[in-house]
Image 1 (tube, rainbow, N blue to C red):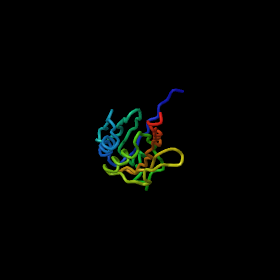
Image 2 (tube, rainbow, N blue to C red; image 1 turned 180 degrees about the vertical axis):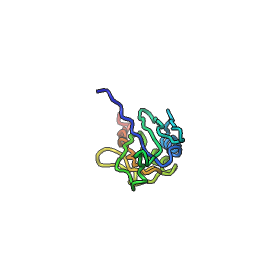
Image 3 (tube, rainbow, N blue to C red; image 1 turned 60 degrees about the vertical axis):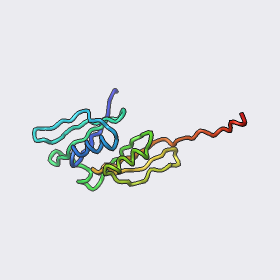
Length: 139
């Protein structure tokens, strides 16, 4: 089966979410679809090879955002080269630290961030391996 999964994050304010994700993650807006009532029902966002979408929550459609139900049951794992700077940018633009970025015993440097719309992100990267120092006088 050849398939592609594009998660759609439901949010209270789609345009604010587009602004947040483009600034905080360095993402690019690829497509923005608005219905006849002005509701953003699909905005496709790309960061590197990762593509996701956002849409305005609309209770009548059954599209409920995390803030409306008291939190998100989903963790989005975003693997980046520099988790510290990514988390810092997210916080700078309104996100909150849930679990600080730190070295983990399973070989990752990661933590959890809640974006301004209630979605939970695990910001992850590989632990940086430092090269052993070599004493050039002994070569």
